[in-house]
Length: 116
Image (cartoon, rainbow, N blue to C red; front, side):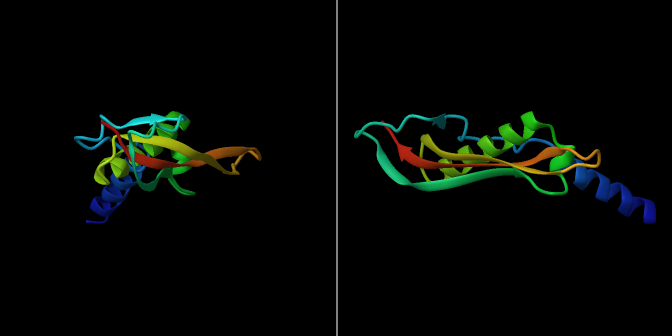
């Protein structure tokens, strides 16, 4: 029985290491650094993130970046948006076991728009 709990904890830990996936309908959301034109309606802002102090060190930088972007796209789509103009992009760093630092999380914030 104890082994079952250990195996379950391991699976949960590993699932935190994969990039957040894009929900159906979120794939159409375009992420850009350019603010859209006046034909687009501003819907609000949203923040996507991937990683934390525990799972971040086990997640590749590429998956942290992709996961944060996908989380942002999912939130934008839930708001009815199809374009996100990036406002901020931050990568958190923590000390690693070898004395250096490692990226443990990525946070992306953007303005959400609905464009024709």
